[in-house]
Length: 378
Ligand SMILES: [Zn+2]
Image (tube, rainbow, N blue to C red; front, side):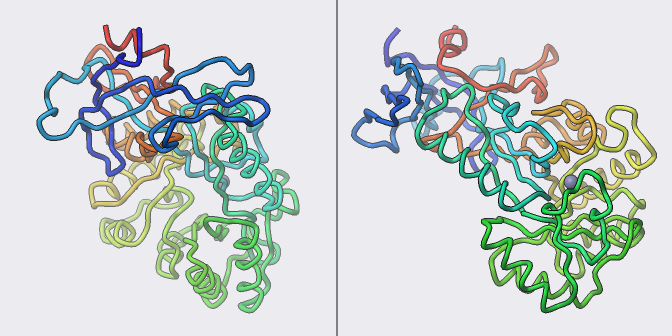
């Protein structure tokens, strides 16, 4: 089979619409262990796949079918193609991050760790993707991070064994708040994490919380809050946090409260941490909150708190099952996984098969490889 190899698939575009697309083997682009590359005329037209053995390899490329071409062939009904998935709440210092290589999770957002080692991990991952030193099936995920938890002196998680000193930054007052945000920003953070757990020690005063929010906003960084304890989710949102690290689990919120949160915050789901398959009362509360939050227009981001307890390394089928229990359709689960743009030159593509009832089996998502093209075209 040649470059003419092609098949028409259903593909999710970057704005979340399903579109017919043509999947082709791209021109060859070879990377090798010396970081030399032989590229086509325009790198943006090709998918760069490196191979440490310097063998010839070809990448898969997605083109959306437009206008007259649309409908010229029926998209496959055996599954769909998407860009790679993101887990919006992980702790890389609590797992072996190399175990994520090859996972459908192609980007992770660390929400509490040592900023210096996270910056290093992010750099390593970026180098691997740019040099093509890793073959595509094992490419490590892109790493985004908030840096250290900002917490008041003695606040959560400074008392936890899983939180070594560099993973939290105690903030003593409003002036120190600005300094702490600048430290995380200088370390390359893409968000600021506030610990606001009133069930375990002190939480920030409104004044200090606001000072963090204002400095973060000026630096262009969203504030993600771990809100725990009665009233804390709503307080964090009213003080300017725009993302909650966990779907609220301390109390069943009213529709009025949830409508307010739906308008001002997005939530990392983290439903599975409540029992890891043996649901606790908090699981029930969080699922009920998510269900109403979504009905009221709220946005859920798939997040597992990977590293917190016995969470699987990779896509967590129990998190997806909990999202389904909260009423999210497979399509809504995929939206929560925020797939990357499948057309970007360095995209990792995923195959999400349909089950025997014709429903998308999100938990079975896996990386799409050049070898798959023949079987898909049949
Ligand atoms: Zn966490």
